Image 1 (spheres, rainbow, N blue to C red):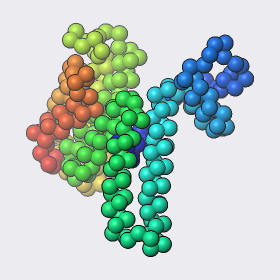
Image 2: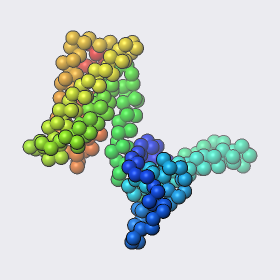
Image 3: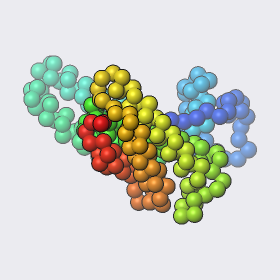
Image 4: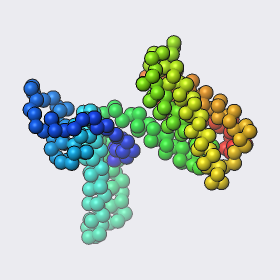
Length: 256
């Protein structure tokens, strides 16, 4: 039950078929990463999954294997004590407490199995869970903050990587076009999601003022995203937190 196992947010992109991997021996000794890929390709058998395994980085494969291993172990732990309880070999209350203790040990002991690759996706999912628990669907704060984090930050990276040749003067990792894309996409997605929830009756939106407030929230999120602090604070944390703060100051708990 590792921290990175529960979000389950590991994705890989297939870029080439696996026929060469299976039919042509490598000209030199295979690296550990290629060995893992070959084993996964031979083991899965289906072309689509085999292509994913062939194209995935070694870090992705390691995290995927660790997730599978820890998930299987967690299920086996719970199932074992369920069986012992059903056969009256262990008292139900005692069984629950033993699982409580061992699950925490399993949780911690699995941490070394995972790579740092999952930090961003893990933070992303934790923010999603935080927004659900604190704001849910009756507050525009969670809606706007998640819109900026998902749509705004997501499009900033997509557009910035492809067209971001002109960098920001204070941050060489960010571009003007990426920041502009974040502002526009975050604003539009926030407005769309507010309209969606308001049309279902969960919140009331006073649109005469809402657009101006959304523009300020989008601007704040864009500024936080482009400042060079990603080595200290991941933008999957800094962007939604800054957005929540500004949205709270502007909207309060309900849109007006």
